[in-house]
Structure formats: C-alpha cells, structure tokens
Image (cartoon, rainbow, N blue to C red):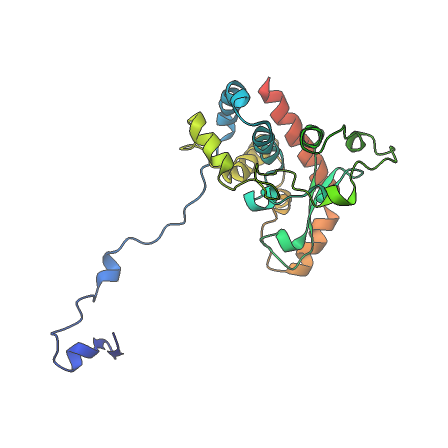
Length: 248
C-alpha cells in the first residue's frame, strides 16, 4: 500500500479512516536467534554412553560420520562434502578448500586431525575404498594410498552412487536415539567449544580459529590461521584424548 507521510493512500483519499496496521509492530515479539541444541560438558558422558549402546544399530559410515563430526566439529555442509583428496595424510590434516567454506576470502581451512579422527578415516577408507590405509600413522611410508580416481570420492558417501551423505542423516540418528531435543548435529560445534573452554581450558580465540568463525580483518584472519596451526593441532589432540577418556 502506497504511503504519503504517515498516512496510507486509502486514508488520504477517504477510502478508509486510518492505517489498520499502525502500532502492530510494537505488539509483536522481537525475533530471537535460534541456536542449535548443544550439550554441556556434564552431558557429554551420558550421551556417549547412550551412543555406545545404540551404535551397532547404525550404518557403519553414518556411525563414523557422527564420531568424526564430534572430533572435528566443523559445519555439516563442510563434513558431508569432504573428499579423500582433502586429507593430507603426511601432516594429519583435513584441508577444506575455500570454495566449500561458509566464510570466504582467507583461503583453505586446515583442520588438524587427532589420532582418534585418523583412526576413523582409516576405517572408513578400508570400508568404502578397499584395502588398508596406513600412511596416516606412518608418514615415512612412501606409498600413497590415494589415486587420482579416489581423490575426488566422497569420504561420507550416500548409498546413491556419486552422492554424498544427506545433511539430515545424523539428525535422524539423534531422533531415533531420543536425543534430538537436546542435541542437533550442528550443535556438536557448541558442545566442543564449551568443553574445550571449561574443561580443557583452551583460549577462546584459538577455539574460534578452529571453528572458522568470521573475522572482520581478512588479512589478519588468514595470518592467524597459519600462525597458530601448531597450537590448534595440540588442542585437537587434547580434545580427542578427552573424548576417548570419558568414553571409558
């Protein structure tokens, strides 16, 4: 409806007595940002206990995907689209191309991989690609388990040829476990963030780097990512060790 000043067109031309929507905005509740459900540190052990009892009911690739997401806490889209060519076995790193990252302008995002995360990838390789992948734990081994055809293959494939896992797959698992009202797959990022800060006492700025949170200065962001990579690798291994320990 066209307005002239504060009066609607209809009121100006005698078609109505006034603006029936005037003041409605003040009566409406303000929009509140919805955060993904995540676990507090004390809730992680019971969740992992429930997961141990349920894991055998889950398709192996799906089970590994959930565990890998807990250990790396990257965004769902970045995980499900990962290919074997993004894994640097020598450096124990997952190198996500900038084109697949939510935040652009600072190059690829490097995710240091704990020994626990590497074990999951080795099992996934053997199950989906065939053979044993040993290079991850033996950098001196000159034999590269990847080949040009395998490099572009999805790490977390769908049962449909050439497709990757759906972004709803892990949510369905949590629903069947009865945990969907307390935890969303994306909430694993918040779960790890809280535990790393509260229980493992890691600096918040270091955690933000690992989460690939947006920084206003893109030049500084790229510099920080490269400069603190060794620290992030230590943090990710500490996280993997902590998760393994509380699993019992």
